[in-house]
Image 1 (tube, rainbow, N blue to C red):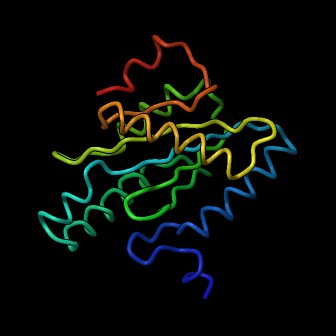
Image 2 (image 1 turned 90 degrees about the vertical axis):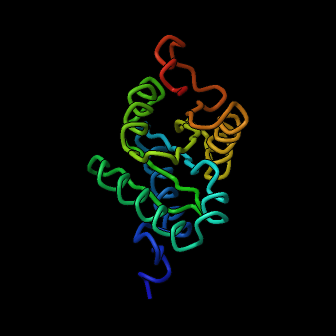
Length: 171
C-alpha cells in the first residue's frame, strides 16, 4: 500500500504525495540546521505535441526515459519525483544559491535526447520558507523559462548569483 501511495507506477519515482512528504522533512531539517538545499521544478517542452503526434505510449516511454536519466545522475541523498504529467521535482541537498550554476550545468547534462528539451525553475531554501512558497518560487521561475523560449533554466526571484555564471542556462 505504501508503494502505491507514494510511488509513481509509470516511472518508479516518488509521486507527488511522496515528493511532498520528503520535501516537508527537508524543510523541517533545514529550519533546524540551516543546511541549504534547492529544488528544481522541471517540465518537458512541448510534451503534448509528442502525445498528439506519436501517441501516449511514446509519451509514456519518454517520461520513463527522462526519469531514468535523471535518477541515474543523482548524487547520494538527492531525490527526484514525478510532480504531475510531464513535470518533475528535483530536491538537491547541500545546494545553496551559490551552487545554482553548477546545478544547472548538471541538470542540462543529465538529459540526452535528440529532439525533446526541458525547462526548469530553480529555487533555494530560504529562512521562513513553507512548502507552498518554495514550490511557488520554483514554479514562477519555470514559467519564466517557458515564456522566455523554453529549453532553459531560470532562477527564482531573489535567488541571486553572478550573472556571468549563469549565461549557460540559456540554450
